[in-house]
Length: 559
Ligand SMILES: Cc1cc2nc3c(=O)[nH]c(=O)nc-3n(C[C@H](O)[C@H](O)[C@H](O)COP(=O)(O)OP(=O)(O)OC[C@H]3O[C@@H](n4cnc5c(N)ncnc54)[C@H](O)[C@@H]3O)c2cc1C
Image (cartoon, rainbow, N blue to C red; front, side, top):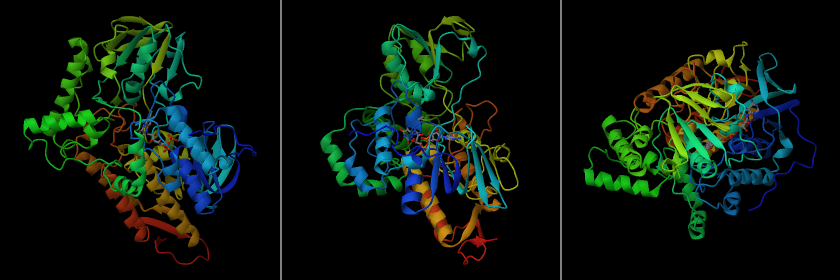
């Protein structure tokens, strides 16, 4: 499958003018929002995107080994059957260039680029209560207004670069995995340091180790990795899946995590040790997210059940890593299994058996500073030519806060969220009328196969906007009570699980000073979808509408 990545022949869209809808971001979410609102709802839509191309995550994250961890047959749009039928994925987990090529194909197919202003970063988003419109300003000084704003800025798009003394003095090259140079990086004959051992690092480290002269991995917290078991897609399997996409769509939309995976409806503690071992081995052999998301149903909730899963994975690490001291350092012991984003690996632990790879445990020997020639820990200096920061993201709230949003009374969203995000359904915020968020905090978001959640949000938002336009409604926002109740519900569901126990980015604990709140909704993709649909069907229960002058009455609660 080929696809053009060239610039449009028409005049470039700008981030200037007055629109019905401004969508910020041109990843999966922004692209679908544009198609749906422009081509189905007939609205005047402008997308504003910081990058110079479509793709979002897959435009920015070009590090070696970058690929998705969701199975490709469901890591894609499902809104158009023809699109599903025509695209062929080569691997179970395609690499970044292939996913970007897919998203460029989507942009071509639906002629999206003509309404996307590229290279424009939104730096201010201010509501005018009198005009009932939003004004958006970008880094280059462009100004645009719209009745509706959709923050399709992604959950994992605000880079988290730790502040380490002396970073600017380093004379070699340094990169963050999420801002990788388009020309790539040549590690041949280089001494490379990778800081971080999260999901991106787990993908990158084995690939970098193949090329670098010497690789030093700086680990703060070891991770429970499970094998990806990537491979070419069998054409017969692909054909069979294409024949049953309607069923697959239903399955993933109504599932707990947006995958064709279900918990084992039994406690891990009820199974005999032989039965449990066989089940664990089977999930281990299948690879992918099975071990994480299709495990015994009490894995996320019972410490004892969780410990059985954790111990199985610890045993695998000890069997794989030859040096017992290194193996112990790589073995997680301080948090329950599954409470951090599950990394899928291809030879990650095996990489630490290579003679050119060294592990530095930052719990034992913390980084003191970066010097002009490398990294200094409490144990001494490590000379480096290249430093790779794989330190993740200011997840979920970071990209939204970076839009510098001010609501009806001039209140800043960053202040409103100072103690943690508050939303209704993860979709909207009280006192920020007509501002929608895609996969925001308080929705399943990063605890799901994200295209499934993105499609559901975009469709809910588009239906809502169409409803408003048809009924002459000027504004929508949640009632403060509905928002408070939903935020409490999100916390309650997370609190019943082991999730809050880890120093995870789900909890905001990777960013100094960030409020420690479990941000995604753990209530499940299917139940959440149903709840959103019921709320809309009941006249947008929990939301408040303001009618345009002379408009017809509407079903929702009008003020
Ligand atoms: C390395 C990596 C691997 C992943 N693998 C998976 C996976 O296997 N399965 C899965 O479900 N999810 C995965 N994800 C999550 C992934 O982010 C989502 O699947 C999906 O791509 C999100 O799409 P999006 O459009 O919501 O956001 P993004 O793709 O993040 O797009 C948001 C866009 O908004 C733009 N933007 C942000 N702020 C501004 C601003 N102020 N002004 C202008 N533009 C702005 C950004 O430049 C970006 O292009 C992965 C994420 C990463 C980083």
